Length: 347
Image (cartoon, rainbow, N blue to C red; front, side):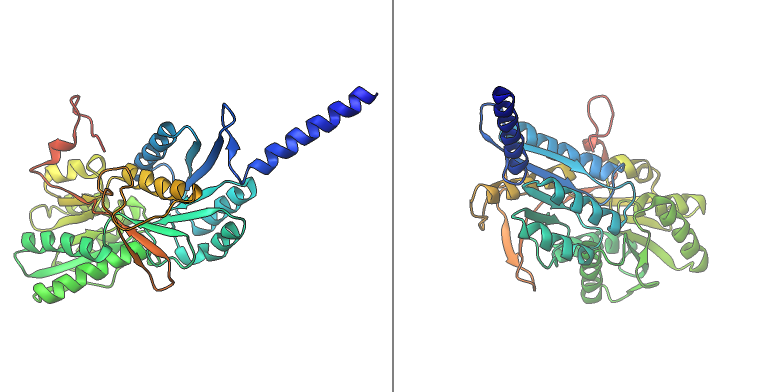
C-alpha cells in the first residue's frame, strides 16, 4: 500500500509539472525548454495561408526549442477567430501570432492572453491596440501608392476605377486603399473612383458577382483594384465573361497560382504581394526573440528575405509596428519566373 501511495504522488507530481509547463515552454527532448508558438490566420483552406503555413513549419524545423504550428477557422469569421485564440490561451501556449479579420474584436482576448504572460504578435493590423508587436511586410500607404501607380499608367492617366477590400473592418486593406486614393489625388486628378469601397468578404464568388454588377451598371469603369486575394480572380472572371478584356483590367494583391491564368488572358494586368511564408517566419522570429528576453530593434534581421533590415514605428496606441520591405510585382513579363522546372506555380 505504501509503494502504491508513493507511486501515486510521483505520477501526480509529474502530470502537474507537465500541465504547468504549458505556458512556460514545454520540455523538449534532452530536457531543454520548448516554446509553443501558434499562428492563427484569417481563414484556412486558401492558397495565401497555405503558403504561410510553410513559413511557420520552416521556423519550427529550424529551431529545436520551438514547436510552432498554424491554425484557423474554415470561414473568415471574427468570432470564430476569437474562439480559437481563447482555446490557445486555455492550452497555455507561450506565443500567439494572429492575422486578424477584425482587430477590434480581438482586443479583449489579446488582453487576457497577455495577462497570462502569453506573447502576442499580429500581422496586417498596424492599428492594433494592445499586442506586444505588429508586423507589416511594408509601409501600407507606400504599397497602395505603388499599386495605384501601375494601374494609373495602364489607364493612361485618366478614367474610372473601383477599389475593393476584403472586409470594411480590415485595417491593412483600408490603409492600402487610403494610399491608392492619396496617390491618385495628388498625381492623377483625372482618375476618379466609381463607388465607395466594395467588400467581398475574401470570397471569390462574391467578388465575381459584385464586379459583374458594377461593370453592368457603370460602363466607365476601366480598372478594379483588389486588396483581398479573392478580388483579382473574381473581377477578372467577370471581365472575361462580359467580353471586356483589353478595356477593363483587374489589379491588386494576389498570388501567381491564383491569378496567373487571368494575367495570361489579359483580364488581370498586374498583381502584387508579399510572400506569406516569409511573413509567417518573420512573425515567429519576433515572438521567439521576445520569449528569450531579447529586444526587437531598428535594423534587426528577422532571418528571411524582405525583413533583413526592419524599421519600427509606434502606432497611436503605442504598439510597436515592425516594417519590412517585402513586396513583389508580377505581370505578363515576369509571370513565368514564379513557375518551377515542372511548370507548377511556386506560389
